[in-house]
Length: 427
Picture 1 (cartoon, rainbow, N blue to C red):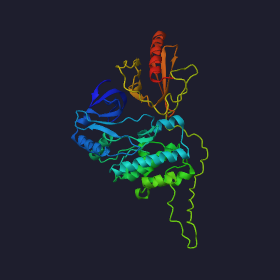
Picture 2 (picture 1 turned 90 degrees about the horizontal axis):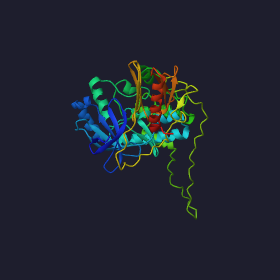
Picture 3 (picture 1 turned 60 degrees about the vertical axis):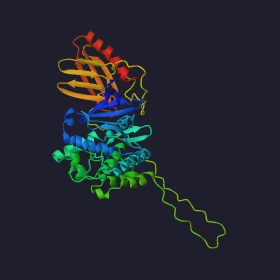
C-alpha cells in the first residue's frame, strides 16, 4: 500500500494470476484504476516486451461502452505494467453463481452488449480469444469485457513458442482448438457459449479440457437450457464453420429485434392529401417458460454447514451489492488492514486484504474476496480444532481444519478471525 507504479498510488491487491498481479490504484486526481504488473520472468523476455508493446498500442484504440478503457501503460518499465479504468462489480460467473440463470430478456441484453463490445474490439484489428464469464464484469451501466494487454501478449508469446492454442476449453472455437487461423468469428463462438452458460447450461458438457475441446470440434452443442426463441441464433454462433457464424452487427440486430427500415409510402394520383405511412409492427418474442435451476456449475461438492456453525456474515447470499462503491481518496493514510493466520503441521488458514487462502498437505487454494459469498467457522473435536468453510458465489464450498491442540488457543483464533472477517465481509 502506498507504492507508486508509474503515476498511480497502490491501495491494495485485487488479484494474482499467471500473467502477474492486479492492483487497485489511484491517479493523482483520485481516479480509481486497475494496474496489471507483469511477472519478473516475463519482463526479461524481449519477445514478450515486443508483443506487449504492440498489444497496448492496439488496445488503446478500443473504445465503445463495453470494454475497460486502457488509460496508461509502460512496456519499457523494469516490470511492464498496464492501467485500465477500474470497473466495480462482480464478474458474470460470480453473478450467475449468486443469482442463478438469466431469463430471455436478460440474455438478449447481455448478448447485445457483448456483441457491441466485440464489434469495437474487432474494428481495431484485435481478436479477444478468451471471452468467458470470468472476463466479463457486470457493471452498473452494463457488461464490460476485460483482459487486454499483458494476458494477450503472454498468450501470443506462448503461441509462437509452442505452436499451441490458448483459451478456455468450453468457450474455445474449433479453429482455436485445432491450431488454425483465428479471426473475430472465434469470439462470436465464445459469445454463444457464454449465452448458454448464462442460461444455466454447458454447451459441451463437463470433463477434462481435452474432452471439452474434442466435443467443441466434433459434436453439436447442448442448447437445452437456452430459451427456445434464442436457440437458433445461439446455435449459429456455435457453428463449427467460422463462415456460418453471424457477425457482431447481425447479432445485435437479431437480439434487439431491430425494426426493418420503412420503404417510401405509396403515392396515389387521385389522393387529395399526402398518404400517412403505416408503422411496421415489430414481433415480440414470447416469454420464456420457467426452468428449474441447473446443477452446480463447478463439479465440487458443497459442504453442508452444521447447525452450530457460527456465521461471519448473516447468510450464504452475496455480502455485497452487485455494484460496488469506490470511495474517494482518503485524507490521511489508512489504518493497516488486518490479517489472520492459523496453522498446524499439516494445514493452514490465512485471511487478508486479498481473500482467503487454505493450505492442506502441500496443496493450496486461494480465493479472492470478489469470489467469496460467505465464510463460516466452527469448533470441532472437543473444541481443539478450528474448521473454516469458504463458500463461493458459484455455490461450491471448500473447508480446512487446523488443530490448535487446546481449546483456549482455538478461542483466541476465533476472536481474531471473527474480527478480520467482519472487516472484509461486513453485514
